[in-house]
Length: 119
Image (tube, rainbow, N blue to C red; front, side, top):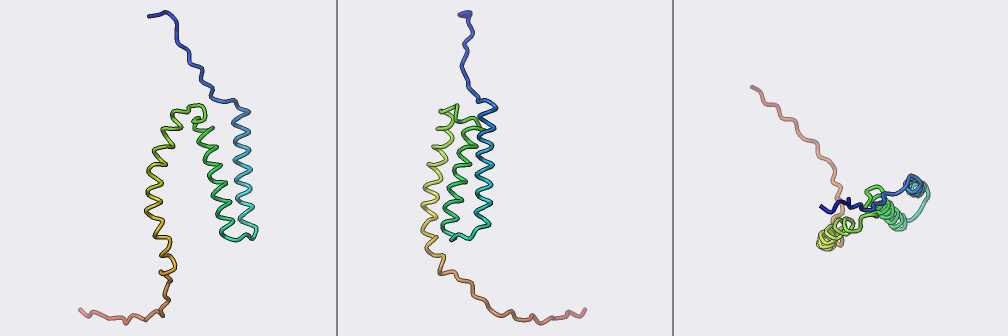
């Protein structure tokens, strides 16, 4: 044994940092709720909501899961997920073009004749 303990500097963040991240998350959530009350075209609203959700997810992963301070774990978490998600999404993307061909056909409901089984 060498006689000295190896100390590794590990910065986990301060309370001020976590409170400021929490406030940003709260503001982004309030912004998302506000978007629900105003009249925007659906495409714009979806793009804005998806962007805000990605930012919120990044903040949560980086600060509350402490992956901002552990670069290797961040890379080992994100890269395999992306490498499996992108081919999956690419495989499902052609199905989005078929959406218009599956219109609902409303047929009048037929009344079922009740049949009694006498026993």
